[in-house]
Image (cartoon, rainbow, N blue to C red):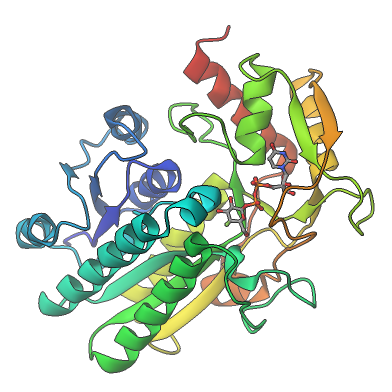
Length: 342
Ligand code: UFG
């Protein structure tokens, strides 16, 4: 029987590589496209090494409609997972047009070509950022979205709406938006992981770089929040668990099991973890001490957000399984691999 094929845009990125590995493990064919704006060929090679499959790769910018069209002409996929996007919140505030152009033009190109070529399933990588500072926690998919506080966040909301409207208007197009909480960790092989360029903005890469001696000291942004230990609460989801959620969502689409043409799922663990707990968990998991200090709050941080994951658990038959301690071990293994430590 012919295998189902999935196009993965941004497939050389952090979540794209892990998802490709899980898709192949689940029996799918995958075509990766990426423009390497925030990734490199080594990531694709890591995927090929883990899977033992010479996964097809095309260096294509999804904003380039003509180049993207050639991918549609060349490969016979019926589903796309669209990861290709910029994701730095601060940069998006400084350069909004760069974000709106890249994140929205690329997604509209994908949707338009899916329609034109009669391809069916669109999976969009959204974010818990759409919830902003929610009044009731944990957040469910019914929790109202808050006005975005950055152009980056706004592109996630707008792309969700574009997908919803396309699914409503165009016969044969169906979509799922997965709202990720905080993805962390790396593949247990340490052959793929997160590769931030420059100074990391996110907590775990900053932690691992501090442990590796690249950063002198981790700054914890505020310990005077109204939370149990005063530091912010987040829902940290292992990237391999997150990747498996994509496999479950693609399976739901290809099995024709969707209940409506557009669906949304929260993808998290359902457990709130504080910044301090995460730091201490990292120290314990890896038997090391981390240099850290408490500094002022970071502008724009919400005090707490975590997921109600019941819908994904029930409808996708998926749940996050990996214990945090193991995830934090893989984060450190990956950093050591990248830096050639040990
Ligand atoms: N933090 C620190 N020190 C650091 C970095 C982060 O204390 O050096 C804290 C933050 O203040 C926050 C927590 O660690 O409390 C997590 O911060 P991250 O930057 O790792 O993650 P965020 O929750 O801020 O960001 C994530 C995604 C964004 C998304 C955002 C909004 O990375 O893409 O959620 O939901 F926009």
